[in-house]
Length: 295
Image (spheres, rainbow, N blue to C red):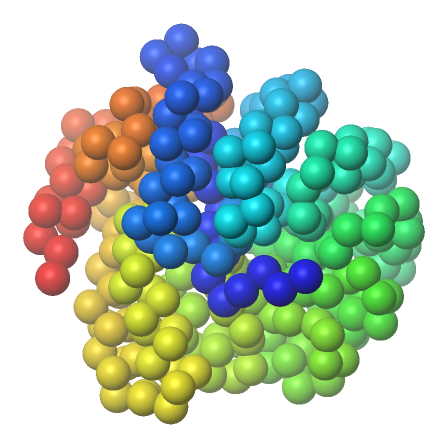
């Protein structure tokens, strides 16, 4: 399974009462594929507010996304948690729903050892025939899936990729030693080009909701050997990469990008579920200015 170079971690649209807005979800899927050119879609990841989605909502999202996408791009289901048995259950249900791959966040809060991390991911991978992408985000989970552990996991045939938010040094080490089937993806939009320069294959992106086409041009310029063009595009995109997470101070994802999508008329509302809260008036003004002054 080739997930491509630009993968969008899709938001989950809610209505004003906090319920999943299925009509808006369908329109968003079409928009990401047809207008932003995403190569794959992640459903129920961190950007999709997985911590506040019930299991039945997740499974309905998986089924709905598969039906709406109709094979145009791979659908990757976020089934990770800090409970191995629960992740195995969700992964089996996602496979039955027809998704094309699995995204597994590192276990958060309980801070397992590297051996515990290895056995956690092994157990889930062994329970499915689907390709698996590890998600290493130490800033959220409190644990780092280090390079040695990632490379051990890369020897498991259906563990095919990592989405890694660790420093570039770790991405470099993984990309240098990984088997040929294993892909490294940055999980930080602002690090897309630097990560690819040290061997990453692509990006699992939030900003691609807004600037997917421009990001694809940047990636293509890098891959096709036009570094000056890639650098110029990265410079132009940098304010968006930064501003969707800092408005101008840090604001938790996906609050800014959901507001941006609503401001652009892509989804009806930027509603989020507690404990996330909407942007303040000042933060919203910052995002509007960011979007309205794009180069």
